[in-house]
Length: 70
Image (cartoon, rainbow, N blue to C red; front, side, top):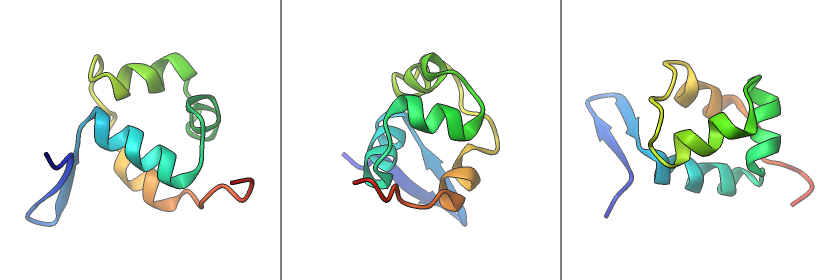
């Protein structure tokens, strides 16, 4: 099952896709939350598909560099 797919030129991501992208970037939920200015609980809810993503999330993820600690 693909969690990140293309719809025209707009990417659609679900919670599992967010989790995968976060891990690929090398961040914990807490670290990503700090970067995005939200709580770690918010990131966890996004990843469980309990809250809709804000419109900026996918663009923000593209702008975040990989974590150099990993």
